[in-house]
Length: 394
Ligand code: FEO
Image (tube, rainbow, N blue to C red; front, side):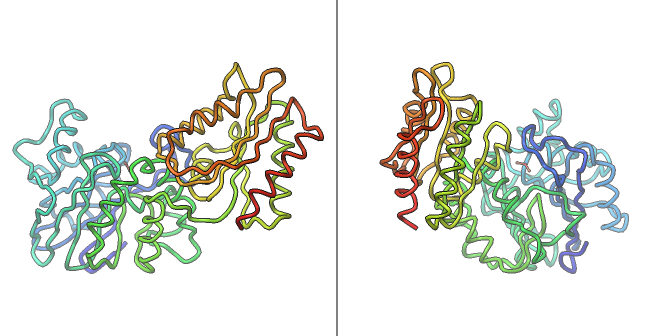
């Protein structure tokens, strides 16, 4: 696929992967993107997962009409991108690797001491590489998503190679390699961002500031489609996500239910919230639904209701995992409410609040709901009061 006259897409699609990065379900597979820039000197942007080395090297050869590349630029050393470096360097004996110092340290660790000492060019923020008509400049992007990450800007074609940033789950052979209007990029890009980069909002903000003054016509991520239109939307939504602002008005009800009584309560709350005009109400069963999607919902909306059972004088395990997944990603700036259930010593509400106590900018709903095994008139009245309080702001 042609990105510009001089730049071609040479990425691969993985439909065999069970869990991306060991824990994210990817029902639409995964794309490991790579690009070739043809100029007086030619270069390849990043490698791909090790299982696709032969396919990828074949694509690189086709794109370069059999010529060996001068440079392999490595922006990120996570194995979904670095896994084929060794095979590539063995294939092209004269190619040099261009990357950050931290990347070369990681290379040595990943490849049993092989750091390509005599074939490497170390670059840092502000350095550039002349290819001929293209000049590439490097932008340090630490923690988006690992500390060694660099991004690369091509001033000729006005193109940003953004490493993991602006990526999304899903292979590209179904939708093509560029964003189409009917491709709901944000859905799987949001789940990807909050799952993988969400903890590093401050670092993402720092990179957004660095690229703010660049003239960018296309963003080439290491995952997902090339973004080549409506760039303000994509840059804007990354700004919202990384600054922990809420993207949508609405209530997420995240719950666990052992025998169905907590579920009945949250279903009743959801119905009332809709009747009262709340613009979006999302429910997620933390034991059965995708945890990464539950996390995405919580960061997306402005209000989160936590509903769970007391379990071993703690909260139900999936709720513990959910709250931990939020707090480790700097969950903040939300309105939160609590529903607890307990048959003899309810403690879940207090424990959930304790788990969230270090989160910044949380507004706690005044009304809480205590269920003693199953709903009764008293807890139904508490649910009604909570529904009215939550709906008030919309
Ligand atoms: Fe796509 Fe952080 O690896």
